[in-house]
Amino acid sequence: MKNPIRVTEAEYENRKTGEKATGCTVLIHGEIKAVLDQLMKENPEIKSYGQALAGIVDLGVSVLESQAQAVQARAAEAQENASDHKE
Image (spheres, rainbow, N blue to C red):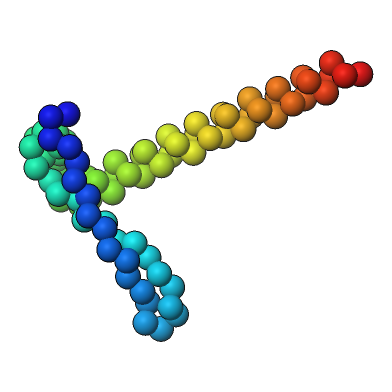
């Protein structure tokens, strides 16, 4: 991708609870804008860049969770195999 995705962030605090959260702003330009424009054109239920990005982030998190579970499963299997060889 020629134009890197630019993200700025700021920390916010809930005045009532004191809970802190990071807010991110994504600049939509260049190639990512063209990709999102095409995505929204082909999927009329996606009505905004924010909605498109939320879907992409959700999908990305799901992929990362699946990969982490697979790594944990392989590690558990390797540990089990190692303990089988000790006996």
